[in-house]
Amino acid sequence: MSESPSTLPEPAPFGDWLTARRRDAGLSRAELAGRLGINEDTYRAWEENRSRPKDRDRPAVAAALGVPLQWLSNAAAGGDAYIKARAAQVRT
Image: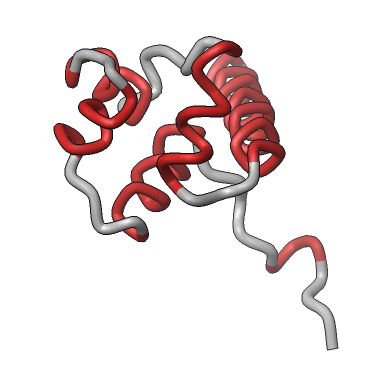
């Protein structure tokens, strides 16, 4: 039996998805940033939804997390949709 749309969880912001995948991989922020060759502050900004990985960085992020690139792209797109929907709710 499938859930009705009203009982499905809301999509999470991209940073929440990214944090969960990093933890699933058993990595700290510093470890993952090091593997990606980026500053830990840059990585933290991704998890805190202040910025997103650049397109050129996404394959390395997906590989480091052990997820398909499409999952990362979908999560980023879904996170953006989530943020826009929340902003619209705040305005009304």
